[in-house]
Length: 116
Image 1: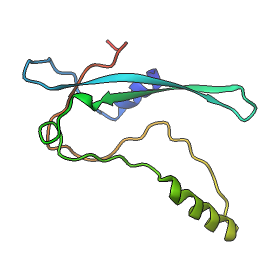
Image 2: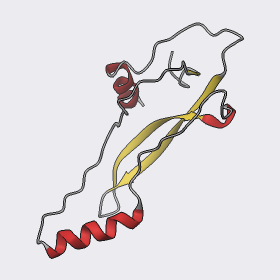
Image 3: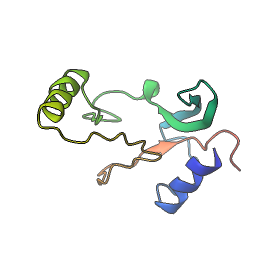
Image 4: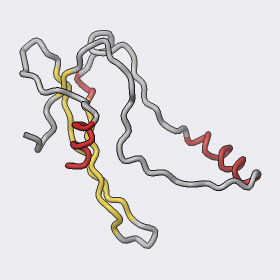
């Protein structure tokens, strides 16, 4: 949790503001996952901070959504091309990913649980 939270602070992700009744505040939660090594031993524990968007209303709180993910049907052709061209394939584990964009609207989210 500390590593994830420190990444938010380092990237100047948010600022703490007083809550007012007119704000539509988005909830949040921590997601925990245990990563295992190839031999089955515990490699490390990961924590991800997630916004709960189930209280937002389309057209009021947001107008569009965007989620950059790798589609599973693109992996096979890429690996096939790499094998046929005798390329080296490497795996990358991204610890923190931040979208570098600017919002025109203000988004309010609860303070992370366990963080003072």
